[in-house]
Each structure stands twice: as structure tokens, then as C-alpha cells.
Length: 183
Image 1 (cartoon, rainbow, N blue to C red):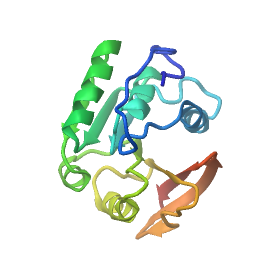
Image 2 (image 1 turned 135 degrees about the vertical axis):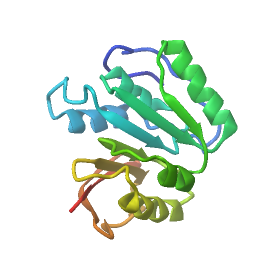
Image 3 (image 1 turned 120 degrees about the vertical axis):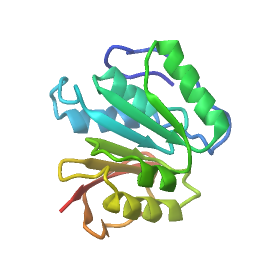
């Protein structure tokens, strides 16, 4: 696994064995960031990200590499938190790493993010609805916020969560990305 583009381009990232920490594939991350940047390499500069169920931290680190001003990694696993910190240290990057359950983080983080990415382990399907409903009620999601859920292509997390609506769905390989906005 590597960083796709930006100042940390081609740098290797470590992961943990097993399927609970299943990093987004390089190809899927590249597609995600191509969509969000829409052809403008500077589009993500200065943005604020929240990477929920962060795992290895690959998505948030990619955001940092592409110019995000701040990234908050939220992960409940102590091993994964240690891994994220090691990956950040190996790059000389700094970010906020929170070891806590996502529901608690949604209640405690009190700012509007530009992007929120969530990628629970695929086997934890109820977490998608819980998290998307929690996000729509949290301070993290404003009118401008883009919420992206990575999920298995055969699972549909849903179209709408009390005002948070899916604007786009993209399938790539066995994975899919659902993009949500308020409105």
C-alpha cells in the first residue's frame, strides 16, 4: 500500500493483517481523490477531514499528502491507532489521532469538516446507518460537507438519513463509494 499523489507520493504505508483493518485499495483511493479534486490538484488544499474507522489511516494520509490542513483519525482499536501513528511518523506528518468509538467522536467533535470518510469493517453493516444518522445530527456536517462511505458493492448503506442524501454511488471492483450531502 502506498500514498498515491501529493507531497508523500509513492511512500509506503503499513497495515495490519486480517480483514478488520482492510485498507482502501490504491486504485479506489485514487478514484476517490480524482472525483473530489475534479481535475484541480489544488482543490483539497486547506481542507479539514475526518477519517472514521480509520484503520491504517490511508485515506486521511492521502488527504494530508494532497494538501489537507487538518485530518482527524477516529479509530477504536489500540493496534490500529498505533499503526496510524507509526504511518504518520514515517512520513513526518502530524494529525489528530483519536482512540475512541465513532459514536462518541461524533458527539465530541464540534466543528464543520469539509470531508468525512467512513469505512467500517464490511461485516459491521449496521454501523453504516448508525454513523450516517449520527453524522447528519453532528456539528461535523455542514451544507458544504461531503460525506463518503466506502462499502461492499453488494451492500447498500441507504439513500437518505434524515436530510443527509446520497448524491452519487460509484462501484469499483468489490467496493463502492457512496457520496452524501445535506439537502
